[in-house]
Image (cartoon, rainbow, N blue to C red; front, side, top):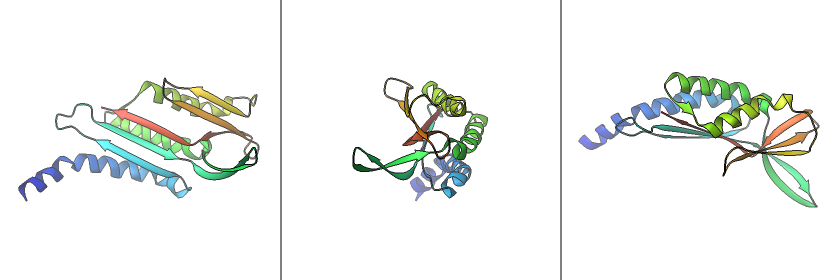
Length: 153
């Protein structure tokens, strides 16, 4: 019993952060997006991290005669929530990585992009990219698949 109690005490800060993040993300989950929160805490408070993924709403598209289901995120629906999330995590000492800062800037500036291509691929880092797809219904670009933000302390 002694070990279980100590284990729960060590993880209380992680669960508080997860609950706060879940509360902030309720707005986008109500709109039909799926979210995943991953937190890790070290006993010496070094390299604590939070990773949040927001998965796109599934849509069916036709590509060369094939029916595909792909997730899309609409920037107007998720940007305000992402900004609140970043503000909250920065207020408790977490910072956003460089490639994630570039991803967030891209999302903030989507409205300023002119339609010159049906699809734009923006390389964020060696292993990360963001794909923007033009949508005639909203007359703007939407984000394909997911938004993934990683914070470190």
